[in-house]
Image 1 (cartoon, helix red, strand yellow):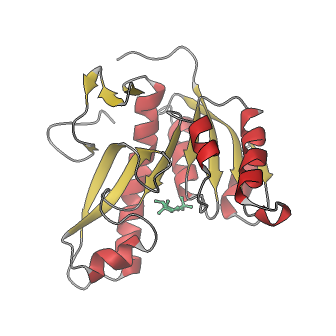
Image 2: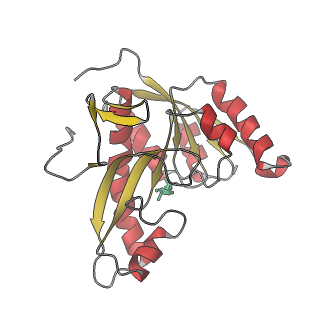
Amino acid sequence: MSEQQRPLALVVLISGRGSNLRAILDAIEHGELPATVSAVISDRATAGGLEYASRHNIDILALDPADYPDRESYDRALQGLIDAFDPGLVVLAGFMRILSAGFVQHYRQRLINIHPSLLPALRGLHTHRRAIEQGLGEHGASVHFVTEELDGGPVIVQVRVPVLPGDTAERLAARVLEQEHRLYPLAIRWLAEGRVRWQDDQLLFDGQPLQQPLQLNSNALQPDR
Ligand code: GRF
């Protein structure tokens, strides 16, 4: 497996508890992810994940949308903060804001998100409740590159989680979240190692075009961790 020489520098954007951020930091700490988190930035100063990151001696920053007249000016300020760290990858981990087109274009091919559904199903909010309401047998999470289309960019990898009889949105969300914590560090690892690439409008895995998103638990692909 080809390892890049230097660890991939990440800037992670969060809005809340930051459990995915924790999973990423744990994977780095355990030597499972050749990356460093240069900074964690939040649109909410009270986000729990900020405190966790600061305890790990990571630079933390909060940028309050109320201080900016519109989305574009906020996103420009955010971009300035991020670029000061010169990241190789910008990681959205529960960052609850719609991003302007200029921001998304600036980070094209180095901006990823984790979304709690089997995209393209259930874009947007309240995915767990909607999965139950729609009687879906299967739910899950997806890691995808971010494009201007909300939750619409190319999907790298997904994990499937069965919807069980009697599931509540909370119970289902908890089981999906547990899987997100495996999924996100692995996807970032593949990017850090150069195994996943988005090149000329085509996602590649180990140099081969990816026709379908990778599946975390499938037999066709046994992730080596
Ligand atoms: C996760 O469910 C993620 O899929 C979604 O927002 C939630 C963030 O949770 N985008 P956390 O802050 O990482 O705990």
